Image 1 (cartoon, protein in one colour):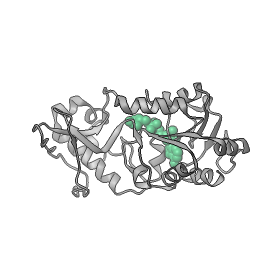
Image 2 (spheres, protein in one colour):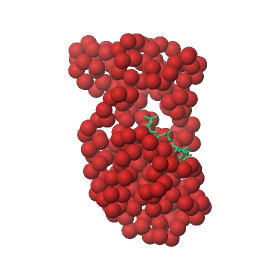
Image 3 (spheres, helix red, strand yellow):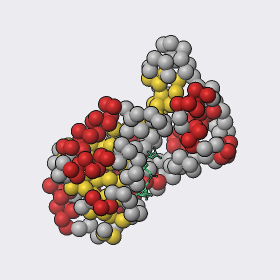
Image 4 (tube, helix red, strand yellow):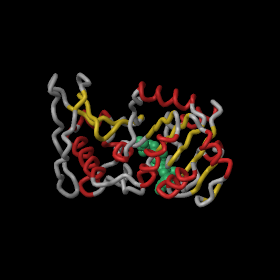
Length: 254
Ligand code: APR
């Protein structure tokens, strides 16, 4: 383990020599932007519900207005936030490495708003939606209607193609991750020479297997997190601290 203000010389060398980097982010990378976690978004109108009762296909089938209202509420909360220095450093890093893949478990769009493109969203996105019946993607208008403080039930839109209900484009409890995105993330992990895990507890599968896959394929593993995690034992370097502080320092040292 290293303190955040000390970047070990062998890590600096590994970052400079890396030709193929995978950055793997979790909720912690957006913490300093003030993105509410799953449970923190259960305030106001939502405080009497459990996240597990809102984030399942069964919940949407039972009460689509309730579930759609919650996701629109979360989308509005995210829209009020800004990318932080960690998102910006990750977006800038791509310019100094021949191959760079960004894999995230987050459903916010802060990596994209920081300038990253081609982000692999393992758990989907709050800003994508699709028809439950025919799968047609649904585009949100750029502007989000202002919700009353506390949120409310909202009627989901209907599909222009078949009239089916539009559902949030996130992965719910009990659902599989999008196979094309997962395959691309696994392939990137197998091929990289350095994987940087940022702000993830490393507990939620199958995403949590991505750093270990990279390790088994002989990549070096760097973790950035203020707390101990399930990944600690496998890391070559663990920098303890906030992503928004450490990522700009790492980028400056490359
Ligand atoms: N910088 C870096 N890491 C941070 C920061 C910060 N400023 N603040 C908190 N963290 C770390 C925490 O110490 C913790 O290890 O971020 C991690 C967040 O862990 P989780 O909440 O478990 O988030 P994540 O690993 O992304 O969870 C995966 O679980 O809730 C589901 O679908 C959801 O995508 C999510 C998945």
